[in-house]
Length: 147
Image 1 (cartoon, rainbow, N blue to C red):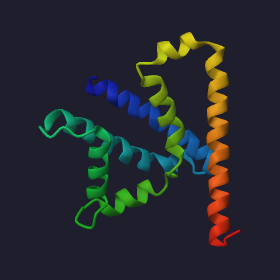
Image 2: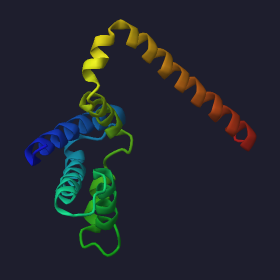
Image 3: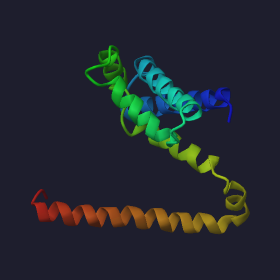
């Protein structure tokens, strides 16, 4: 993909993340913009590094490294990065990232060709995952004496 395509996707994801942050956590759009801008810059820098550096790491690895370095004590922008990113709830990007991951896969045509049957399978998978997580959490919290 070209850099402009990456940038458009990151901006779309930032818009969705800002909306999820507003609806789900009550953080205003204007409060979210600096954090979203930081995340876009870090993500774009990671995309550029994957193309430029001979070390072939996944983009998410470069995002992690850049994020850690930009928030580390040696970074001159540390305070701004931490303050801006703290306005973005950690789980707000999951909605948009999950949607993009599902839509960006090469299996979209296969998914559509499955028709209504895939919805039933998806409902069972999501329900099973949720109930399994609930049972696991209940067991561990009971063993720990928290509940």
